[in-house]
Amino acid sequence: MRGQQALIDTEPLRQQLLATMSQQAVLVPTASLHNKVALITGASRGIGKGCALELARRGCSIIVNYANSKAGADEVVKEIENLGTGAKAVSIQADVSKVAEIERLFQESKKAFGKVNIVMSNSGTESWDKTEDITEEKFDHVFNLNARAQFFVGQAAWKHLEQDGRLILMSSIAAGLLGVKDHSLYNASKMAVIGMIKAFASDFGSRGITVNGVAPGGIKSDMFTQNAWHYVSTAARYLQIFQCANDASRSPVAPQTGQRTRLRS
Image 1 (cartoon, rainbow, N blue to C red):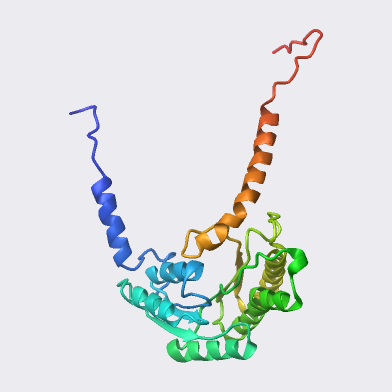
Image 2: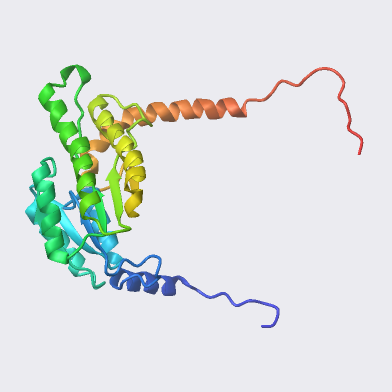
């Protein structure tokens, strides 16, 4: 009818579009990663797995690195190849806490695909140890994987990445933003990564390599239930602080006494 607009139910079209996008490569040039290769450490589960699948949906081929979980890594490879986006994948075992293993990982990655365009340093470990209970061995274990390994993965990326490549290091929301109980060792190791990110961003510019850091909060993955409960008391404390601040901002201001001055237009 003239003067009126017909209402069209777009939900079926939206669902069809989503289903199509999940099966085909992203065709928007700025989002497509066809002909790119990404190396992701610790990609057999958790955040690493999620990133591997997302990049693969955009057409990027993936090196799925793992330390111990070969079955998990091989499953990620199968999921990537079943996406139908043209992305390929291989799994490569390497312990990135050892520099020689990092070098071998990059060499085997380039042998498999001929190049590496993107490196995501995702491997890491948690620590919920009380400060007074942390031993020298525990300290070295956490810093070796969370900080030292990321430094040397970055160093290898500098040497092996293609010109104008991308390097992403993994920090944490716990690094400086939140003071979490029994988390001092983990927090400190992730704070070190923030320093690397800023310095690498300057150092790697001569090769056109962009360096970014990711500081995730709680991510609902297969590892979520193992660690999320530790943050509950801290989150509750911060929510209470924010609520108090919010209430204070809403408090009525006492009216001033005396005559008002009316402004003339």
